[in-house]
Length: 137
Image (spheres, rainbow, N blue to C red):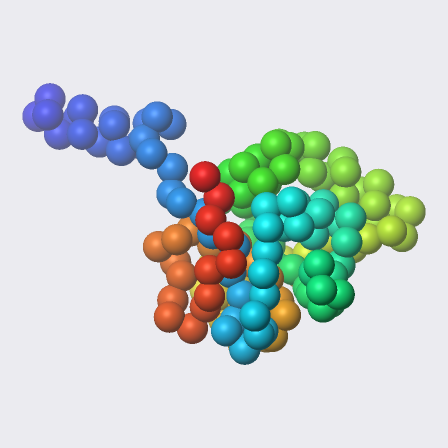
């Protein structure tokens, strides 16, 4: 009984290893090269194009732990900071937030079907019809 409790506690503990997050796109997007710095600029609304000038759109997962972890790892900003930052950009008309999927399944489908759409998923959620562009440590 104690062993079951400790195992369950370890799995639910914040110290349990987090899932690997990856930035992905459809293979139909062509040869997209994406650095961490470019990904950060895209998700902070500082640019809407890749280094070669290719315009891209972004997709966000629904609000929750995976999304929060993604922004923290990529931008070093917590959810409140991202919301405040985005609000300023939208208010001034300089940028718009990414499309927000209702689920991981919807995001995965959009990413597979839409060239030049970039998004993030947990590595375990990546299917064969997506190409990993960048892994976040």
